[in-house]
Amino acid sequence: MENPHVVALYNEFHSKGLNIIGVSLDEDVESWKTAIAKDKLTWTQVSNLKGWKDPIAQLYEIEQIPTTFLLDSNGNIVAKDLTGDALKSKIQELLAKN
View 1 (spheres, rainbow, N blue to C red):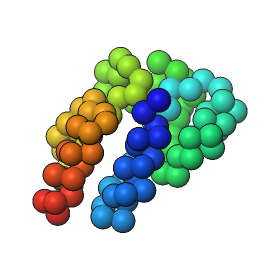
View 2: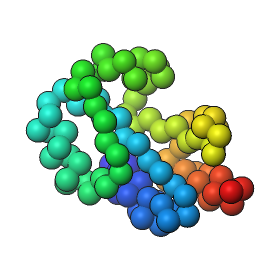
View 3: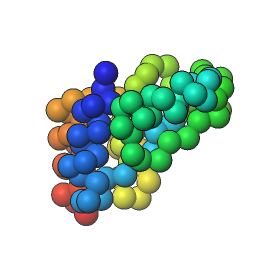
View 4: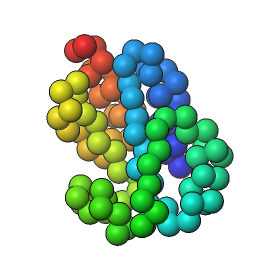
């Protein structure tokens, strides 16, 4: 349900420096590819197709979908699990610093 909002944010802010990497917890490659196409996700997508046993999900203690991490220009995590207007506001704040 959050994907349309994230797509809009990407379309608005990508040219200003926003990049997204999607990490999927799908287990079926066809379902994963179908979701990418359906939701029009144009940024880089990765998956180990291991569901909740995905090493990235375990490393970052992912417990819900979606989970978002915002990184600053130095690669530091500066916010987690923002959605909607809070996500947009934080993106605007970070891009204004660059």
